[in-house]
Image 1: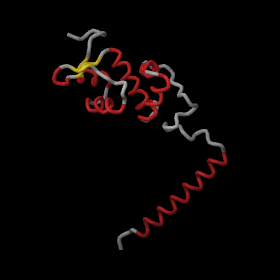
Image 2: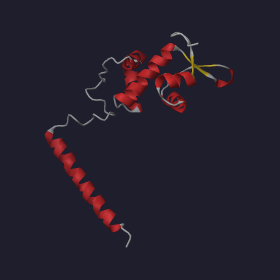
Image 3: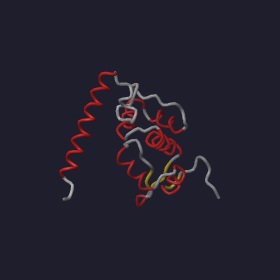
Image 4: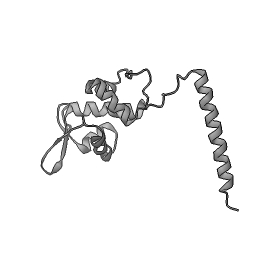
Length: 139
């Protein structure tokens, strides 16, 4: 018999519902202070429906929107768990800053001069790597 929408979920059920392994949920508990499932004797975890909603938001931010752990922590610090749960429901998430500094999108809005400087630096680094690769080749 399936559980109702308001029933508590074990870590196994929560992991299945969210599509992540159980160890990921345990890891997230260490990184996000706002993830606190109920624990019974022996340390068995039980997730409330609101826990699942927040976890779904964390999963969406990390896996779909490209946020880093620090980015999700900042979003929580600045806007709370309601914003995280909203991400899990598919609502538009606008970071506090125009671009989350920890997201893959960071740097897309560079001015042309800064972009040219970064591209030049990248070229220099790639040339240095090629020189090192050549020196380290087995002879």
